[in-house]
Length: 147
Image (cartoon, rainbow, N blue to C red; front, side, top):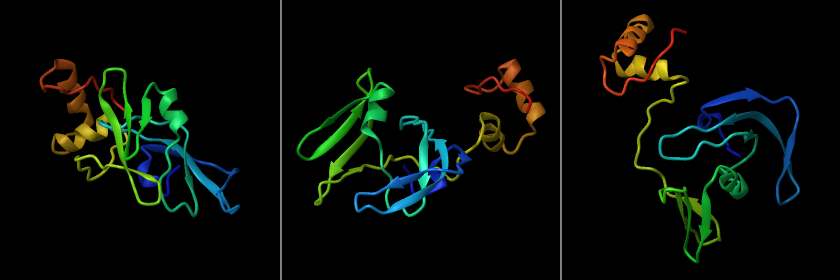
């Protein structure tokens, strides 16, 4: 669950549903979406909940996508099958594990590959980007389709 839609790569509005917190308070689920990141795992069915003060990650959801999650006295880690640490957290004074932020900086989150490469290539028009992609002129430029 997240406190803001900005943490979601894509989302849809939800018309029903509530979350009950530990103190018995109930809040509405506003949107449902997924996360997407280069260094963090992609999570589906992430809810944006009105009134949530922190982001919460479901350990079972991390396990369902193939990560091994371990907790020791002072830290926790989510590791993939190749041994890569995908998430890492440190224990705080009140027994919460706070995920260490990545050293990546994102100015915005692109909706599509075409949008991302449109910005990377100096706002080149899509037709030209598709042509460059098909001719494999630019290194690491994925195959793009006209939208």
